[in-house]
Length: 112
Ligand SMILES: [Zn+2]
Image 1 (cartoon, rainbow, N blue to C red):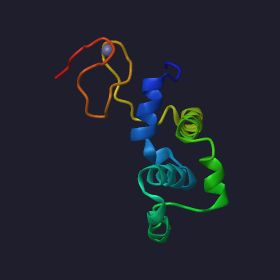
Image 2 (image 1 turned 45 degrees about the horizontal axis):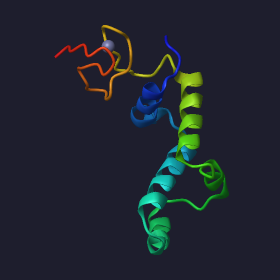
Image 3 (image 1 turned 90 degrees about the vertical axis):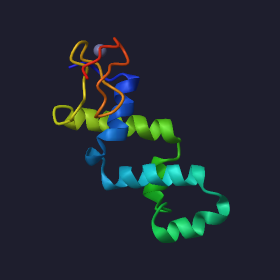
Image 4 (image 1 turned 90 degrees about the horizontal axis):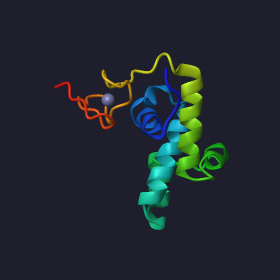
């Protein structure tokens, strides 16, 4: 199998979420909500469990989203690469955009 490349990393982070640990999941969610919500919404988001103030989680997101994402994807790839359900192009074996995609963004092969 190929090594990781940016499009494959995107796919694994977005669609292979069952391999994320609970902490990785919480860290990702926390970053997302902190980026979209305003300061005044934080107490409500904390209360609802949308964001975490756990020091472990805060350390995981300290370097921002790309760093978190890269760490999560590399760990999943190292541990679970043979279990991942990847929707690969039948012509060039590269990753598609989504699990249901039937067209390749690399070689433009179409298998509808
Ligand atoms: Zn292709």
